[in-house]
Amino acid sequence: MQDPEAPVIDADGHVLMEAAEGWLDYFERVDAERMESLIVDNRRHWQQREGVDKEAIYDAIRQRNKGEGGWDPKARLAVMDAEGIDVAVLFGTELGLNQEAYSPSVCRGYNRWLADYCAGDPARLKGVALLPLDDIDAARAELQRAVADDGFVGFFMKASVRGWSCDAERFHPLYDTAEALGVPLLVHIPHGVKALLEENFGYNFLRTHVVHSFAGMLACMDAIYGGLLDRFPRLRVAFLESQVGWLPWFVDRLDEQHATYSVRPGLETGLRRVPSAYLDEGRLFFSCDPDERYLAMAAGAQLAPGVAGEDCILWASDYPHSDAIYPGALRALTERDDLSEAQKRKLTRDNARRLYGF
Image 1 (cartoon, one colour):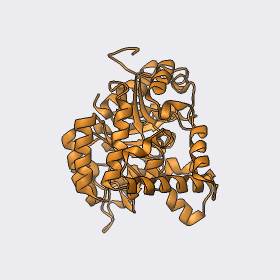
Image 2 (cartoon, one colour):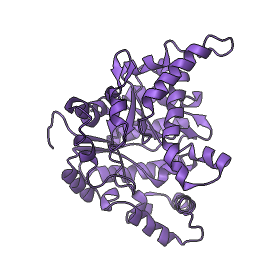
Image 3 (cartoon, rainbow, N blue to C red):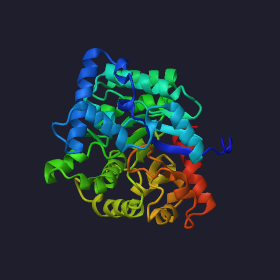
Image 4 (cartoon, rainbow, N blue to C red):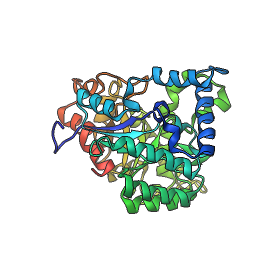
């Protein structure tokens, strides 16, 4: 570890359970068969490779990603050492695409696999729980178990789950549990909005270029306007893999529209403050790509009277995904000359510590 008092934290890394040997052994037979079918069919669609056999799909998953660190914790730790990363917070890959399709037993199986992966070095590898969001009681129980037994540091949710946004009332009991446990809601993009684009514009992989940011905006707006931060005053929320160049414009737009429409009969939002003021509480976070052209602009922007972008932006590697910067994701940020050393420390250390409660 470079500095025990100020560890470099990767706020959003990934695992590739489906590329590991023996991963299906973690699941009951009926779950394994259904889940494998979902993963393979999704990958065929995403890569526009209909009819390709499943072994070729698994080979493609391994080859499109960057090294064995996604499924081998020893390889992951070696990558982290070489990259200068002390702690990595880990999300799934294929599983997240079909989150609403998974039963409590499937989520337990995945979380068990991830816990065994993180056991390679529990101080450095931190898991994020996959929850069965069709069954909120089961989701609450699994979150409690994953935090208590496996040391997981949060739970993942898509920007939209079966048409329910993150502020939907059905999720409120889950947020009660998260508050009690002190773990954050982690909205990972682009899952949940991709279908909206496909339904209205047809499938085109190039649209992923905009769906990440678009989904982040919608989810953040839902969290603020839906009253999530008022109802749950200790809940921390992050929007991951949505970039941040849009953040200053977006916050300004929310405030402008709030001032324009909230005074009109029937359009009252019920917010206790203007939208930007919710960033002043230090409970909203956004992950950046380290090579974003407008990262420095977003980091330096005054988003609220007491908050600049640098106070809520997180650095993330996205390793081992094919579009991640590897090697050099950390250097891509630390070697920038348009960010101060204080800003770099916030993005790579301080903000993630506040989000995850390290």
